[in-house]
Picture 1 (cartoon, rainbow, N blue to C red):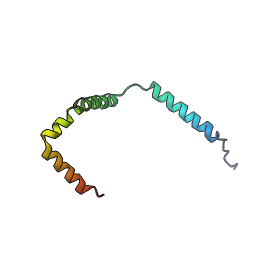
Picture 2 (tube, one colour):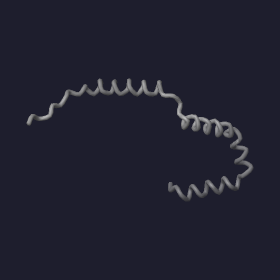
Picture 3 (cartoon, rainbow, N blue to C red):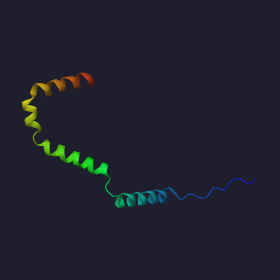
Length: 77
């Protein structure tokens, strides 16, 4: 029985170039999936509310102070 032949692999830079080229091609031709659309809608929603965050923190100061104390309790210095 003959030993299995091992084909010569491309050198590391050539292999990386091939992977990079293939990855670029995949990302350029990929259509937007429903998950991507939902994620973008979620980002847009919270970005719209971000401008009023400080106002909400002032209205509910006791709640946010309590949250800060709790996180400091959970996360050691």
